[in-house]
Length: 432
Image (cartoon, rainbow, N blue to C red):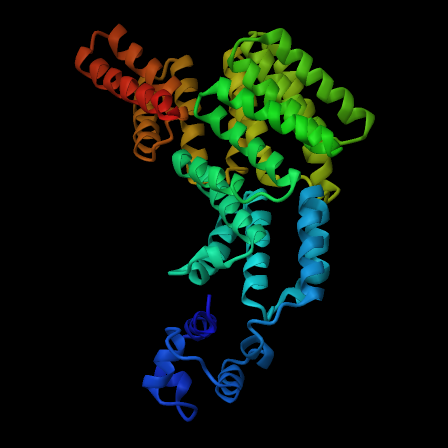
C-alpha cells in the first residue's frame, strides 16, 4: 500500500479530477506519478493536498507511522466483537471518532477489516460491501506479504465470510484455508474452523462439517470461550439432524441449552431452541417444533425491544421462515398465512422473498389454487436457480416435477426433472 491510493480514494470521494486537486500545488504529471505510487511526495505537497481535501495533515504525512494507542484500540474492538455484537456496538459507538483518519495505512486497513467483519456479523451486507470497496481499493495491485501475519489472517477470513454470505462456497473455503495458514492465536483457528463447519453444512457435506465443528468446539472449550462452545453445540445439532442421528442431536442441543441457561446466555438459548425446532420438524413432531420456534422468537423479540445489541432484527427472518414451513406441514394454513405476512417484513436479502414465494405457492396448492401454485413456483425457481441458490431449489423443484408428472404433463415434468438432477449434482458434487 502507498499513500497515493489514499489520496486517490479521497480525491474520488470528493468528486475531484487530478487537475482540480493538484492545481497550484504541483504539476498534473507529477501529481499523477504520486497518485500511482511512482513518485514519493514531499511533506509540503502532502500537507497542501490534505488541506485541499479537508483531512488532517498527519493522515497523509504520517501514513507509515504505527501508533501504539491505535493498536490498543483495534485490539479492544476486535476483542469486543469476539465477545458479543452488543459489546462491539457499544465500543465502536464510543470510539468512532478515534478511528476517523487513522494515519497508518496498515492500521487503517486493520480497522476496515474489523469493521467489515462487524457489519457481516450483523447481516448488514450493504454496509459490508461499502467497507469492502475501501479495503479492495487499498489491496489493489498490492503484495499482501508486506502485511503483518494478523492482517493477512483477517483479510482472508473476511473474504471467506463475505463469499459465504453471498453463496459462493468454493471461494469461501479457499479463503478460509488461506486464513488458517496465517493464524497466530488458537481463537482464530477455532473461529475459522467453526465457519468451515457452517460452510460444509450448507454444502451438504455433513461428515466434513462434523469434523470441523468438533475441532472448533475442542479449542473453544480449551480457551474457556463458553458462548462459542454453546454455538458449537448448536451447529453440531444441525449437522446431526441432517445425518438423521436424532438421539445425538438431542444430546448436543440439550447440553448446549443447559450451559446457556446456567450462564444466562440468552442469544445462544434462542439459537438452540430454534435448532431444536428444526430437529422436531425432522422427527415430524410439528406441534412441538412450533412451540420451540415460538419460544426462540419470543426471546428474540423481547431482547430486540430491550435494544440488546446481540439480537439483530434480521435474524428473526429465520424464525418466521421456519414457522411458515412448520405451519404448512402441520396443515395450519390460516396461521401460516399470518406468519408469511410477518416474515415479509424481516427479509434482508432479495433471495429471502423468493424463498417465501415457494411457500406461498405451496399454500396455494394446499388450498387448491393450482394456477397460482404454478406461476409462483415457476417464478421462484427461476430466480433461485439463476442465482445458484441450490439448497433452496431442491425441495421445491422435486415437488414441482412430481406435480406435472401426476397431471401427465410430461414435457413440463421432464423440464423440472432435469433441473432437479442438475441441482443435485451442483449441490452434492461441489463438496470436492
